[in-house]
Length: 166
Image 1 (cartoon, rainbow, N blue to C red):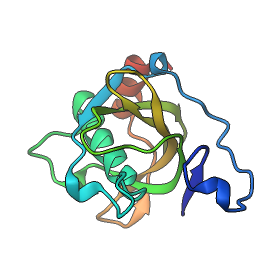
Image 2 (cartoon, rainbow, N blue to C red):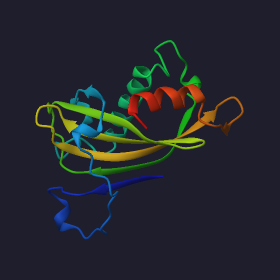
Image 3 (tube, rainbow, N blue to C red):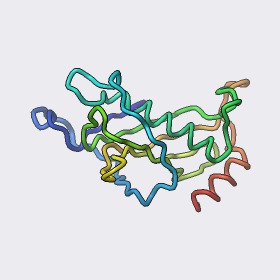
Image 4 (spheres, helix red, strand yellow):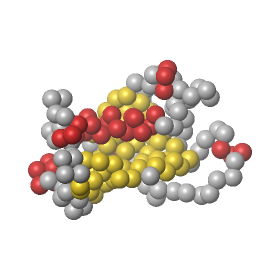
């Protein structure tokens, strides 16, 4: 399930939407890992800002680089070896991203459960620190060969806990 939530947007005041909130407002200091992302022309929608679906791609790119940074995945690895599958994603859009905006995506693991990891992510203007979008992603440790969830591997727990201080 993907829930897309808007907090401020130039068009939305004209539509009646239910009041939804993730209850999470990240600050730059919450994140120890950032991945720079280039806004490409193809990322734009007809209104001239980044299409909301592209935020999922930005989040994914940063998560993969986060796993690589923690030495849980590398360029020689197969995606079948990553061992996670997405269970849930929520995104809050704070402000539109324009073509050529310098952005970076923050990733942090907020919780390690028995079989899942909850990451918090944000898309941030790289120069001003403005949070442009934020969200949570629940990843489930997964055995792709047996097609079933597994316990979060101990080496993952250790590396993530040491890096995040959790």
